[in-house]
Length: 478
Image 1: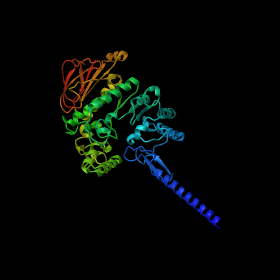
Image 2: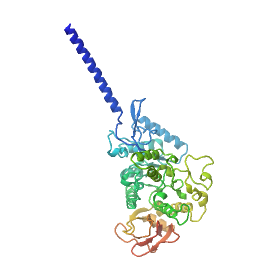
Image 3: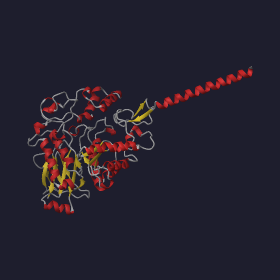
Image 4: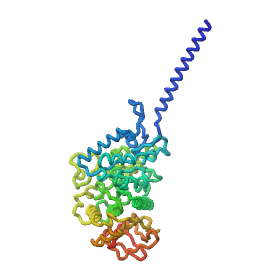
């Protein structure tokens, strides 16, 4: 009897031990499942991972939770995407813009990223060039216009994306120049734009893409950015001539339209649309803005301070309705728009600027005309100048033709050299231009073809020029 009792007790203990082990295992699995696979944060705040109970798995969303990342490593996914591109090609579209396309190839092993910045780990992944080459070839779009939006990318990768020999894309957007007012690299911490850094980025990417045979997409504004005219000093006198709004808007246009690359004009940029300056977080629709407003409150910022920061950084700043006229809702709709228009729409609108001499709209039309007519702008090489210690907020560069291209331009009466000066300074300054070899860049004798003041700036000897607040000017030599 004692033996049977001992046996029963042993069996019971083993059973209890097994049950406890199973429970511990289930508890460990449960704890593991409650923790995302990595510490990556999505672009709009919070974890980039979402648990899907129906599948019993996590899925990755580098952006909003409603936007799961596709698994491009799966050939069936790539087949489906080729079909999507072919569908629109066959419908007659003129080209394709591929959204954050450099994030499509994920690393072989998913690991935590410093500070949770998963974009840096995912960007320009191991098979991204292979996937793009395959997509372009199989979809038959190699001869069409293609532009890729590149997040947290590198110059070397963008050269490879856009060099003709790669057969990937025609041109690439990068965003490094639009992070020069991020304090400590944090979008939601404000600072004045660092123009020295802006100049460095433009020079690195302009001359670097040129050296590698790549091609830049040039832009200030898009659906993910606040309005550049508000961002870089054009806050005063919206719609009025002589104001900082007018000077900055035209200066920004000159700055990118004369660079090497393809300039993009985003809706309303050509009329000087500004940030709307909403009075309440309830006026915003953007999920990123609302998420970070709550995050900033949790971090201890006051509602007023959090709203001020959102007003400077929100993607909704660039998403307000196009301002066509001074009519209700800026003439965009007779109904109720999805988001409010900027209060200055009665002065800043297409109808007010159409045909008006010196207006922002007519100035942008002149930019487009010169871009098309002057081969030195569309085809010339680029090199950047040092503007001197007295002009730390000035960006200066040269475009030039040489060889047969220069001969053809001269024969057509076109200029072969252009010098572009853009001051981001609200005060007058003196620029002293030096080429990369240290030689003075003489401006005397050059012809002014465009500027945002009615006359040319005062030009001195040895490369000096007196620039007025936010002045931009283009000189050429024929």
